[in-house]
Image 1 (cartoon, rainbow, N blue to C red):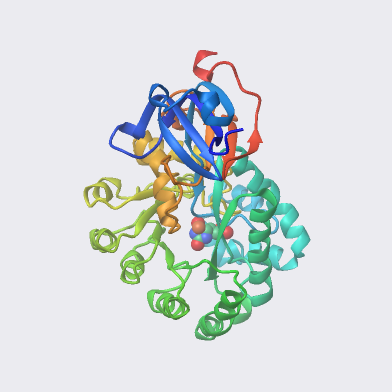
Image 2: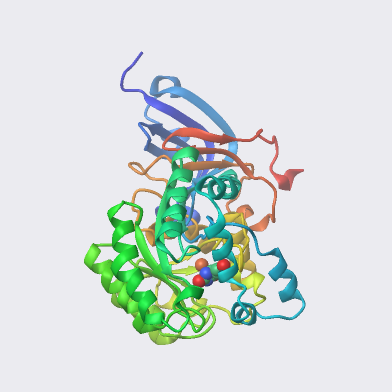
Length: 420
Ligand code: DI6
Ligand code: FE
């Protein structure tokens, strides 16, 4: 056997590479070679340097299936105890998210359920959620803490996040979200809680290798700019990148603050101002839009997509998977909602769950199909990229590869849904 042969060669694919200038970076009648966990070659089949069998140990035809980079979900709160279906009912009866939070529900009720759950229970409850995302094409997943609000439970959440990555064989990036809500035991002692987060919790969890980035909820019902700045300063000292829940329910100037720290992303952004956009544009901070929360809260104020485009701020889309405002288990559906609700083009939405989502996590080795990138990719049961945003529901991911290895496989459907 020829030692220099590629591990695997996929033929007859419609490749949405998100590299190059063509719409979607599309390469029709394409081939893609995987070797040692990386993409070794991408291009049109008729430009392959030799006969397929001479080039690779395993050769497979995809019969014209669409292949994309595997999806990257860059904002989730996927690890939590319990659920909040009851609050869903309350909201349908007219209660607002903020009213429920003020009455002791909301994030606080998930904090109680999460504190009460053992590590094993938290893992068992979170695993099916991560599996659902994976089955729908996600192989890189950000997971935040923030339902513990004390050291032990925050640690437990982050350990569960790491374990999900290990056991599912996917990439998990963790964010410490100590400033998510004020824990009830610190009522009237806000400053003390912020000090605890900055001086004890964050340094301890960072030292244990559990923190890849630092996030906060900068909002009227969350933390103000000065409190957020304190945790950002500590993150900076520890050499950790920052990101922020900003301008979700009101304009707090959070986007400009996170841009000042050259943050990875500012997320939500329905109430983002022109000044916030400019600050993000000059800092290279990614705008992460979360249509699941917009939908579930029945918001009406749209994020300023046209202005973000104009200022060339990269846009990413994520599920925000969480028990309160976005119990969403499909990133592909989030991309579709970004089109329908926020008027992104399907190409923008799909870049938003691949290349730009990777950038929002500070990862430069994934999110496009190009030689040298990680071989994280999905072969879909559709032919055209726009179909990934167009179909609502349905398990469309045929095969999911992580670092060149098949991790999830569904029966190939002979036809795309459009042909049936
Ligand atoms: N914004 C969100 O979308 C989630 N957290 C946040 O700061 C919601 C969290 C929850 O309601 O449980
Ligand atoms: Fe969130």
